[in-house]
Amino acid sequence: MIVLVAAFAVLGESATAAQVVGVLVIAGGVLLVRGVGGHATLGDLALALAVGGCIAAYTLVDSRGIQYASPIVYQELSMIPAAAGFLLLTLRRRGRGAVRAAVGPGSFAAGLATFGAYILVLAALARAPAASVAAVRESSVVIATVLAVPLLHERVRPARLVGAALVVVGVIVLAL
Image (cartoon, rainbow, N blue to C red; front, top):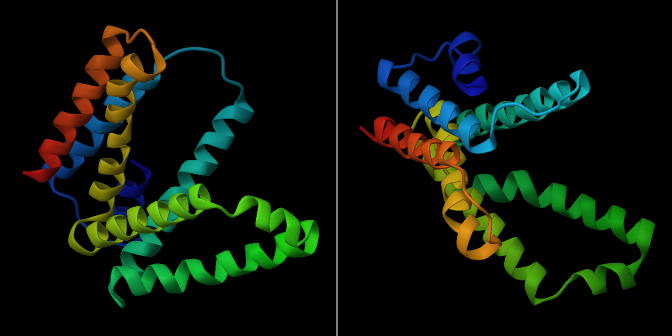
């Protein structure tokens, strides 16, 4: 929702009624999957809004940046310098042994999967409004809900199932 509002207010992008409805339905679904209630402090809310603001900011920056490069080139230009900096910092603080211990088939596969997944996000940003892409990225809660019973042996409450269904409906609305 932050991306939708910021794209409209800051970047002057327009939004269709279907886009607004789709984003709101997905947001409602995510809230139901997460569950409403519980104990949260003002600090918890501030942290959640800060994380949401950062995600919205890089999504909007990426939606503009992807206009100037292909998804793979954009991903390389934006992530390789950060990865190299992190590697150098880790080498300096922890040494080669720590880096060698962390690098293996699992970390290599995770890195490739992360790289590939974000290339797909960038490809979507090149083809669709940022708010729609950001909302559809939340469809992971549907996957988590579906896998909760067989893999985690969780009991899935009806509200969580309704929330997952709302996310699917919101994605369908955005696709139409």
